[in-house]
Length: 325
Image 1 (cartoon, helix red, strand yellow):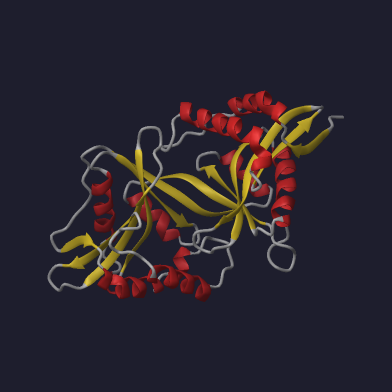
Image 2 (cartoon, helix red, strand yellow):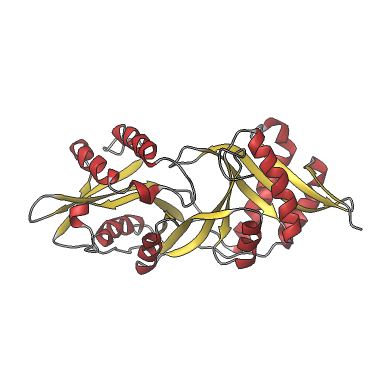
């Protein structure tokens, strides 16, 4: 009978962990090509493994079978969810080749996550890897949001309209932004999370009250107005993301149409303004959408965005405070 156990990684494990990663199939992504997929993971292992004692929030678990590494799971604790503000552990990398291996690693990981008083263990999984998603589902993880992306070539111009003008936001636009945002609180909560909507909206309102609409904080804020009436119709917030290889990226972290203008397809022009910005030099434009709001997925698809990954979350709260862990 094969003997197995899960333990913390040791520096001497590095060559075998590298071999395990190289044995994983490239999942395909618009964010990274095959070469950068492997190189990024290997570089992370080489940098973190010798320094694990200096990284108190990092944990690297190794599954040992018959005395040899057969899989690993790397995660970091105390990541704060950007919407719910719940503490969560984020899986950064893994190499698994069977459901049993994943189950053993995540079972150990969720006990450690609970000990850190983090509420969830989350993983971003390739949208097209049905087997891997099934394995995580069987381990208790549930899908909560997707990430959609579109690659824009240099010189790309997004949709625009002579009837609606998109301009940079100004401080006097803040009341409009707060009012519109409050109409869509439900859409911001990731699927499956039981965060109170009133609390969620209050946190957003407090955060947005401190916005630097002059873009001095590095984000870009835009307002769309109806030309004929001068009435504000929607807004979009963008910030520059990481460089993937040699390609820049922009992240759309909030976009909304005023209820009075809803149902007319006007968000196309807000996204169009973001695409024109990102297309000046060529870039990736991406955003996240809660799977609890199906319209977001169809909206992304209609505008040519591809779902690249799906975030799965495992509830690690003690019994009585959430789902059994």
